[in-house]
Image 1 (cartoon, helix red, strand yellow):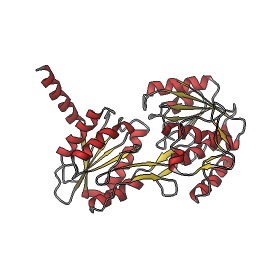
Image 2 (cartoon, one colour; image 1 turned 180 degrees about the vertical axis):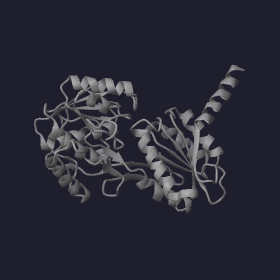
Image 3 (cartoon, one colour; image 1 turned 180 degrees about the horizontal axis):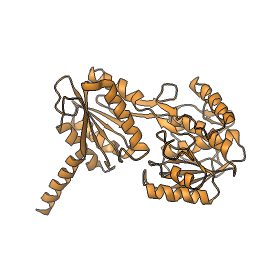
Length: 365
């Protein structure tokens, strides 16, 4: 009996997380309305990751108008059953497309795609897909990370920059290394400290990690974590911050320099159009700055003109496809050569084989 009541309670809680917005068609909507469900790992007001995802959702809604009905659930954990419960709730409310936005949502989405072959499923940051109704998408964030690293390298006075990082996963390591290479390209004396918090988002942990980096003498901070806590910590200390996911210039105006950002709508809008037309073929998409999926937030007035000019110079080369990020010779922080002199990591597969941090970077947990 207790187990039965627990199941009922879980379902009831799942129902309370479902939020709808959009056209007048309602969840049932009719044949001319496509219902789309989004699963977010955090709240849409987190000041970072989930807010950036939801900004893309709102752009989708604005573009399609009353042709779509949007449903979303916040704080969906990376537990497979939580993913499935929330997604099935949306499907029961008319969803034709389910879009999950965190790496750990992947396995639940894979099972759902098999169980609901007449629905479409998209997954951000994972690698699983099938040939019929399940694809994934991500982006070359290393491009914008490198540009933001140039800003850090030119603006640090201590030659120490800090990085609040979620996990030592490949996605995070790519960002750490590309940011550092950008800084190193304009400041050969720069070093970088990384503190892992072992969660995607926890404002208290992010702020504590930021404060520890500031105590080490780091005077420019950046992050791969979900909230704006590191930026606020930098502002309180009178130091600079480079954000992530969205333009947070109004959150910490005394510290914020720029941020690598996502434009999720650049992928979602044309992909949803294909789904609505029955023309979607699953893919593993990897967007770039050139196609508008990856961006760099406008440099604020705290950034000097010479720094802005350097960023624009390199950005133009990246957009033209003439600027690979990972060019040898490169060593990891154990002294091993990871990219030979004259070589470069040019493909997505080569870049995503990264399992190290570069020489000049120190990481702690």
